[in-house]
Image (cartoon, rainbow, N blue to C red; front, side, top):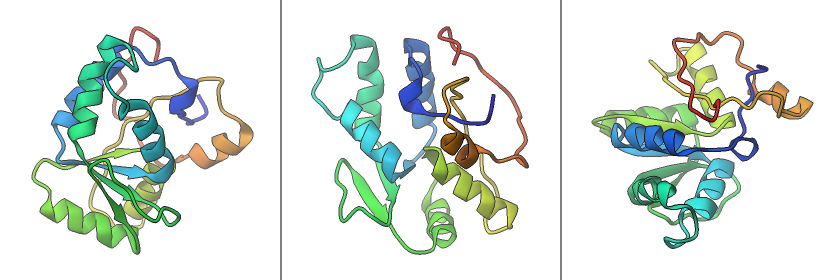
Length: 162
């Protein structure tokens, strides 16, 4: 593994979506980067019937979830979302103070940016999950996905090998 994860390069399965629903249920809101927000909205905002039945519980859960989107290029968001701009560390600290259960962070670049803030002691803690895509990264993706000072605390494989 080169540390890269790319939602578009994997074959999601029912087990992965069930696990994602469990994670969403343990959070007050999602914190997403622009690319992940746009990808998830395109995949899970369409009406029921636009995807396999086993994806519907996840689609309903993510549709209802509060979302914060970190982006300097988007002018507006909807889909129960709010744009975050300015100092990322301050914005996340404020959200953490307001949050009861916590925030679920999604994406590739955003978790790495938050991990860098953690490394510089701008954040107190960060827990993230990765869906690696073995053999799927390009050199550009691989470089942007590495965080060599992070510590693996556990793994969970799905039937699809993710």
